[in-house]
Image (tube, rainbow, N blue to C red):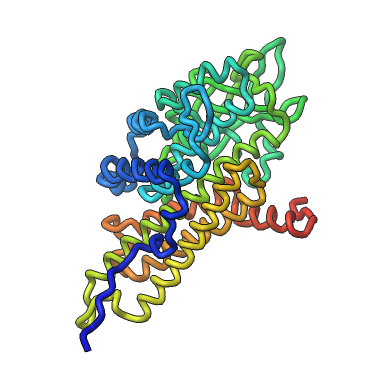
Length: 394
């Protein structure tokens, strides 16, 4: 009997994902995928190895595509759906988590904070330039001793006449060393407040963090504020307390729900291709039952994660999403993406540890994605509180 030849399908084709998207969403996804194929993939291994990426140049190109703050309305922003934004994040992170981080920090943290909480003066001054990629923004919340507990931050802002004077440090800040403006959160007599800080202000510095083993194709910095004097107008007028910065984090987490799946998809596609070409004991590696078991399990988790992401995207577009639901997506999809990257490495064996293949680069990046914008443990506690009614944070 002749051996049956089956046309292989991609992992997400098996879940008929395209049928869940409209024409605009598919077009945006394809545009971003083409940009990554042409502009990012030929260089990303070198950028990762050298820990150097042309952030300013890429920011302009991403702005021209309309990706910066693409889900925001007005002020030069594209105003797309949340789902379309998520699909763009997926394609960007399929190239590299550092590229998605550049876009999500710009749009979902710095720009979103100004769009939601800023004055009209803030919006007019910064949003059009940030949307075009002509200026780069960063978001200063995390401190060295206060990541999961930002309410304990030590950075202080005090009134001196009508001016605000800021002192403190922030840590692990994406884009910090190349940013033209920073949204900085500080403790005041009025509680935690946010400030728009031009990085050229005297007393502000942003030394880059070196020797990273993850997110190497991304600029990560410390922010140092030493008697940084700002006018009263620098204050974000409608953000008071932790609700402001935490709502920004929820925006960024939503992009990660989709983005992490991009890294997983890229690992799986590269691995399936490799296994089909690699011969061992006279037949392709992909023809062995153990290999197919691994590929089948990874396909299942990738598809389940994608269906969850799309469901959350539709909820967000309907204005019905809850922060706890974003935590469900972030916890599951990053955890499973990292597991997929590690499993793919086992199929590639020694080849998997080189930059000739993307899997260990993605795995290294996902180690950071696993713990930023809320660690897995934080999201477990958020979900636990939602379903038990009990807070385990204090």
